[in-house]
Image 1 (cartoon, protein in one colour):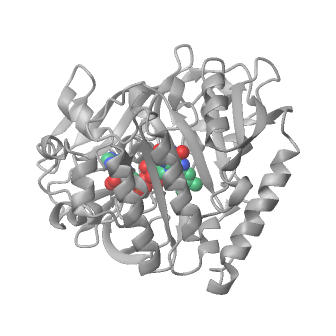
Image 2 (tube, protein in one colour):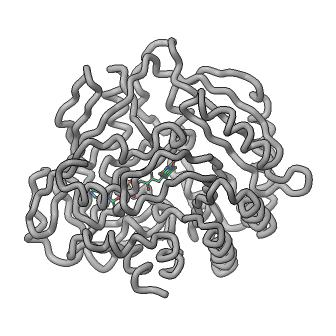
Image 3 (tube, rainbow, N blue to C red):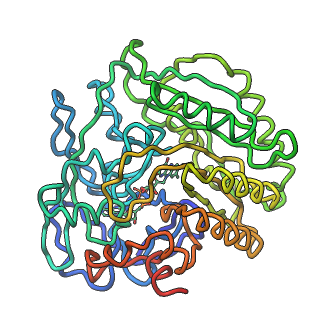
Length: 435
Ligand SMILES: Cc1cc2nc3c(=O)[nH]c(=O)nc-3n(C[C@H](O)[C@H](O)[C@H](O)COP(=O)(O)OP(=O)(O)OC[C@H]3O[C@@H](n4cnc5c(N)ncnc54)[C@H](O)[C@@H]3O)c2cc1C
């Protein structure tokens, strides 16, 4: 038994776990239903399996091979992106795709086919995975690549850990000549200005991302800060910093501390602090640019002991009116969050059968858990996202209905053929058993 939870801070629960120490372990002798667990950086219940066991992969943390000439890395599935950066950056290589935290494992990143600030250029992590080994509960070890067991390759990328346990994986890195990034910052007022900035940056910048104020109304509606960046051409390579986590949120914030006034105050302060950089070009180490929240340990405690919901969706680029309507609904609900991130995704196709990323406008925001009030707002947002032919990200989800899941992922039946019969998750039970 052990305490396991996801990042949305639903209470940690006791649940049975196995902790394999070697990558040649077998699942055959382990009883009950199974689900791999990476580092619990998924926000909802897709990394939990309360009725069975999790396979805690964090001891599968060894590097296997690193071709420094070609930038090809092979490592066990429990190796974290943080550990990888420590090794590859000094050698002049970088992760081909990285999420907004480096505290994820290779297995977890593949199972959610994660995306990053370079989606418009490079697509998802799955496009850069060359091959991996998949352990099935009947003892089979499948080598999966676009050529070998291609259907398991495609089902496992973005397959939510349901097709088996990845023991190791190999990926293609990207070359860098500097450990810094050159970042240009602009202010926008309204979604139209965001779309213009984004379209103008996509050709020449590898990374684009915007912070959106989801609280401001009136003539401040949809204001935000847009950033575009490239790896610097010079500036030297400095070792990736081992996280010292200088700041920490020591306790769950009390409920009264989080209200529409504190959220509004935070957003206003953030807007004006960033506005100072507008029009400037700054050179910074990659860490604060890619992982701004990793410097604050347990930042999820600011939402208090009831936790929060993260809601991340994409609507097609042609549905700008729906995007506007969604944002108005979020603002008028008064539940808007501190940390709303807006990004235009590109057309590079995800290789995963069930992958979330696709072309369109993506918004991710946190909503404090205010019980039925928050759930009602989220259900209303779902209706709009569905109407626009959009999609919601399971890695961030704790509440979507079975009906909503089936509407977003009609390919789930074809995917189901590749699920390991002994694998399941709380998320999967909820969306396939519920209405
Ligand atoms: C601050 C923050 C920022 C984030 N930013 C982004 C972002 O920009 N883009 C993005 O895409 N996501 C983002 N995420 C979400 C995060 O990247 C994903 O949820 C990621 O999958 C978590 O990895 P993990 O190793 O913690 O895996 P877990 O959360 O523990 O598990 C995730 C899934 O992977 C499966 N899994 C784990 N290990 C294996 C294995 N060995 N074999 C097979 N399946 C396995 C699990 O069963 C589960 O379904 C962010 C999360 C945080 C907290």
